[in-house]
Image 1: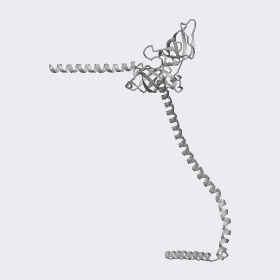
Image 2: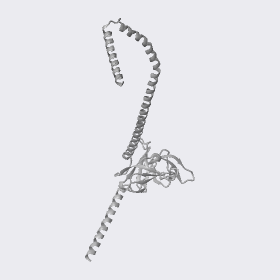
Image 3: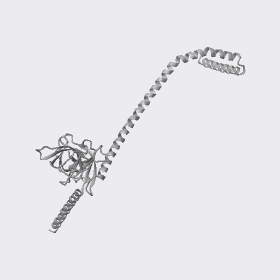
Length: 320
C-alpha cells in the first residue's frame, strides 16, 4: 500500500509537469486571441478585484507594522543620541574645567611677572586641597610641603576667577602656619588671629590689617590726621619679616573716624576672594632660601661632627 501511494504521487507529479509544459508550449505558439490567452485574461479579470480587495484589507496591517518598526527604530536612535549627548556634555564640562584652570594659572603667572616681589624670589604653585569647615577659622590645606621647599611663615599669594589685567582678583592670601613633607596649612589674612603690617599706597599711611570671625578685613592703628581716601590700594609694608613689601592686599571700602578716637577705622575689601580660591603661589624669598640652606648646612655639620666623635671613640676603644 505505501508503495502504491508513492507511485501515485510520482505519476501525478509527472502528469502536472507535462501539462504545464504543454500549456506553456501552446501559449507561446498561439496568437493572443487563442484559447489559452483567453482563459488567462478571464482569470486575471476575476482575480484582479480580489487582489485589490486583499491589498486594501492588508494595507492597515502593513501600515501598523511599519509604524511599530519605525517607532522602535526611533526609540533606539533616541537612546543612542541621548548617550552621545551625555558623553559630549561630560567632555564639555571637562574642557570647561580645564579652561578655567588654565585661566587661573595664567592669572597667577601674570601676577608673578608683574608683581613687586623681591629679586631672586622663587614661586611654588600649589593646589588647594582643603579648607576650614567652620567660619571661626580661615585656612586652607595645600598639596606641597617641606619636600618642595616650603616652611612656616612663608607668604602666600593667589589669583581668583575675577582676575583681570589690573590688581583685582590678585593679591595676598596669607602665610604658612604648619607644614609636613607633602602638605602645608595656609592661614588666610581674613582669619580672626591674622594681622599684616600694611600701608596705604597713595598717602603711605601705615597700620595693621586684621581679620575677623566674619571674614572682614580692617586696617587699624592709622593716625587720624593722615589722609586716607576710599578706593585707595592697601599693600604690605614689609615690616615683621613675613610678608615682603608691596604685595597688594585690597582696596579701601570705607573710612571711619570719630573725634574721640585716636586712630581711623578703615574697612578693606580684599583683592582675593577666599571662598573660590583653588590655586596659590608660595613665595620663597632669598631670606627663606638662605634659611633652608642654613638649616641643611647645620644639619649636615651636626651629622659630620657626630660621625667624627663616633670614629674617635671607636679608635680609642680599639687602642685600649
